[in-house]
Image (cartoon, rainbow, N blue to C red; front, side, top):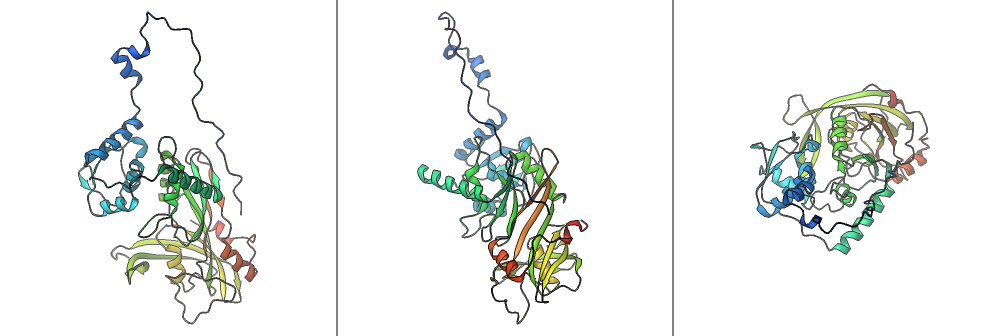
Length: 390
């Protein structure tokens, strides 16, 4: 298995070039301050991006507003669009106005996962903005966030960032979740106010490769790669028992259900309300006395909790899974922590500009490394799922 090379760095330096000192101006000629109004307007004509920003800022003071989707915002989810246009708006508030039907796209009620077309008109209701933080506190927080993100970066160039998301860190915020990847990315806003964007998700307790787009262009292109299944993802897991079929596929329909106010996915029949097809290939890499197995997964689809639900469906739930572990009278072997043993091990995805593959591998998180060492599993061993069919 190939490992990602050293992090790519952008060697360009910002800043304006020094102005050349020209000849002394002729006092008979009008100075720039006294230029004709038409000339002043021509030289100060704002860019489309600046116009969009100005419209957004003006809208904050006017209540209800209509925003026009720019060409480089095409394909964005409507909630991501609002995050980009209103960085000071709490994401939970954005989710709420979309869910309550207060948002309109070309006069029609917006759906939470709806993607935008260039030129579309988005009608936004009055917004409740977060109070700005004190500058000193915000600067210190941003520096801490940048340092943390640097420490977990596996790959970076001017368009793409791949993070090694640790277990326990949520990707997005929710009720009671204050620290998450999406919020940490606020510290990486560029001079135009653009924030790096998430293009896929990992569960809070899943560790490993998380792809982030640093530009709108990269977000749109990478998003299409994920939707068209051009991204190849490989996950490693430690499961209870050993599957009888050493290499196989799991094809089911999954639907969300609420159990004691806890959301989880269940295997459903074709045509059931809210059911979506989910397909996963798996292979047994190594075993430990018929008690535990190291599995390699290659998901073809990307449903919520897909691998966790599929592992439980074949009778071999992932060790440490609080939602789907369903083996009765099963005792955790000594020395193995009761934490989710699931790693987004590797991702291969076309670069948004060059089309060449970005191939990144994440190391085992500490609790999985401890378990693998205890069981004598060799992580350099051949992984049979790598060449499994798509």
